[in-house]
Image (cartoon, rainbow, N blue to C red):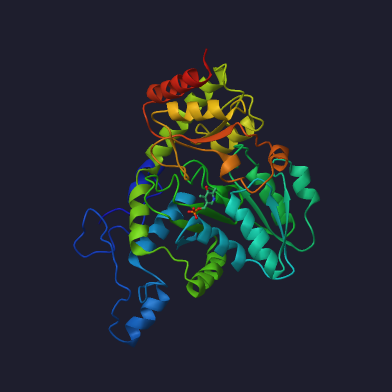
Length: 399
Ligand SMILES: *Cc1c(COP(=O)(O)O)cnc(C)c1O
């Protein structure tokens, strides 16, 4: 019989095969078909009961073969008992948070977060009587000091946006569990190919699969992965609010994820090479990437991530709009895009995107200057990429 995944095989091999690939069709196609059906015909009441008992297929909002395949792949990639396939990263994050909160609860969250995640805490959970405190999760003492008797959730990201800082997941999980709270980690920037927060003690991991996981900038999708009992509760909410990934999105995302391991390793290597080159440039004031020895959490990152430090980095240029415009126009390979994690290098400007609703003073207080650019590194040839940045910098800032 065909393989699904096998614990004796490497991640590189298993990511190609995990996920109900061969069970879902009688004719064993090399590519999984897209199951668009809204419902599956049931033979009799015994068959109906069997489908209920075995997570079979009845109605698309509950289960669909493509979503199940993606769920099984995510279980493997993140090393979790069960997952949910969601219509976006935000669907995954909001479902995980809302299903685990009730009025009167307190959440302790990292202070640098993906912008819309911050708004879930402030504008949605706040409205229903769930209070959130934001602290710097790279400061373990601050995390401990802000736990309250009613703290039920700790929330962080494996690598923060846009200053690329790295919290200690194991230490934070220990604090959560000592206080009977759960830890939820957003692993979008690293993915389960580079680090598995669940193995470091997190209870739930959320992912925007829109980014590195799918990697082709052509599908919006998300997932929650973790302990079966927690997933069951979030699944119940997903059925009620309808945040499931549709079959085509699940299919596209799964197709993208087959090459995730190859891509993200190359992206990490390219990011480290670009960070090292830009660190030497006389025109760049500062470079943020955990591969650099002077990154504040370099050692922790090496312990937590191993040899690959991820594809996200940020650079600080002098605050001169005209020269920054010239630099951006001079880049041939790096595009400005309101996304990240694609196979081509792209950049974003936090002061006018993710952090645009703050005043300049508020931004500066959390380290985001008007010269900061965030770069998502692609799989281009390393030399071509480094040269592209060197040329554009020379054009804009050179004599
Ligand atoms: C993009 C992103 C999200 C939201 O994902 P969508 O798929 O756009 O809904 C959440 N967290 C992080 C870190 C992200 O980069």
